[in-house]
Image (cartoon, rainbow, N blue to C red):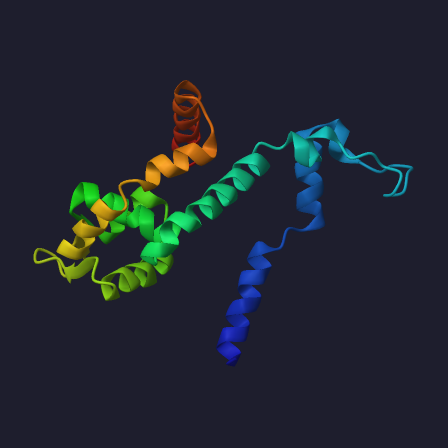
Amino acid sequence: MSKKDKKSKKEKEKKLHISKDTMRDYVSSVGPDLQDPLPQRDAEEAETPDCLKLENQLCFPLYACAKEVVRRYRPFLDPFDLTYTQYIVMMVLWAEKQINVKTLGEKLYLDSGTLTPLLKKLESKGYVKRERSLQDERNLNVSITEEGERLKLLMRDVPGSMQACVCLEAGEAAELHRLLNKVLKVIK
């Protein structure tokens, strides 16, 4: 690692470091309950506040469900040599036929570092084609190929198979879909 890289790394670490004074100021602004969490007790005697218990977190069941749903897709996608992320890219392309890579990343909440190798892999399989925009060469477009369209016909049973794995009634699934989209809009 060069001296310049080491210096840059140290500067980044300094920016990420939160001083004790800053943390104390933050804690005191949040409220008196957090100002001195362990005044006379040692750490082993302290009870975990409810807000720090795993079972009280909304993020954990979201994370665990997402992980498990993706795992459940594997048996349906493996015969087509697709990952879940490749599958959702193909879903967008089946609907759009052609899309700008930046727009695709925005739709799927994927950055270019994730999307670029994924698109290269799909292109090597013959499902998509990547081309520079004729209007602006800085933009890259991706379009579905005939082979990609054929794949859509082969995969039409996957959503129904997954729906059977989730075991939600239609109304429950619609409500969950609505709530998740609401959360996505707020945190995006």
